[in-house]
Length: 509
Image (cartoon, rainbow, N blue to C red; front, side, top):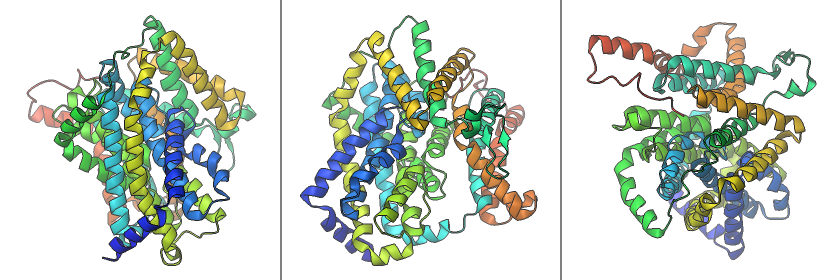
């Protein structure tokens, strides 16, 4: 097959000592970036982009893409060990990863997360290798209605598949939408909810919200519980890794389903964050242990990590084939391509074969190197758990403050982070789920932009959301999921369940 021979040519391009060194350096830097809350893969790639200006385009894209893979791997580390998502797509990993760490199973959770990330990326790279022309053609059909339908499906799936109170989920999501609406209206240019404060013109960045809600909120809760940091008895060794690998094949259906969800969301492009949430929700709904999700189920780690890595990897496909970035990091990489004098698009596959297939080959090798690096450094990161909380807490607060400050280089963002921390603490005390708030804050403005563009195109007709089979199917599925709590109760009345589970289950976070 042409793709196989082109892929082998790509391996011959990248297998040079210098490229391998750049790959290793990129992975290590990426893991560090992923570990630091608030820095993120997109920011890390943007900061390090100037370092690649003197390199060849192939070497440069190898290093930057490996930073991206490393950040995807690293985001899971703080999620599992500290309940602080290093990346927004790692939020769903905290739901079961952190409880596993508290139970002394941090090594198992980390091994499952890293291995699942590798599997998700591998499936996505195989897809990119063999289905690039077909998928690129499909992605061309997406317009504002399709984008909004995907966002709507993400929101509704959280309401329909969350096992907590739907009203608490909706209330949390509504607060997130309100926060996402703060700032300048991108269509009319008018200010919204700024109350005369110029600093609010730029709105609330989701990274600041995530850092405060999860990082500071968790520290406040831990302080209330007596400065105790649970999970420090975790033991990590090769035996734990091997034993975890033996259990992973049991969840092959979850891995395949999550990979497909991730690939779909990466190409559409919904992105890694909604992919991880959707995959977690699907796993919770379909697993026989779904009622135990949130208490330390390994399946709850496998699902979001597989989907996030698959989405992050497949997001590069529309960037290469069409010049449409599927994620913020892909957008930064797209800027790099333009700086290096390359024009993304279908012609890139014809005119720059060495570059394109070298990049695809580096995806295989980069993720394999990343898996080896993070697995061999697991003891190093796990040792953080043995440091007393009284030392860890101030360090985490400082890292969170630095992460919040670097978003806009503004002191005000640190105050916002602290306010979000108090909100996160109150939400946890009142048993409100935090994840819907963060989801709405992350995707609210994007969904609004897509919806308004769709309404402008259709002259205000909602029927555009059912104007073709593709958008109609997504929209119908979204409505069905939104109404699922009511439908499930009606079904329960007609056919009483064997046990009462709805009221007893806890919110997803």
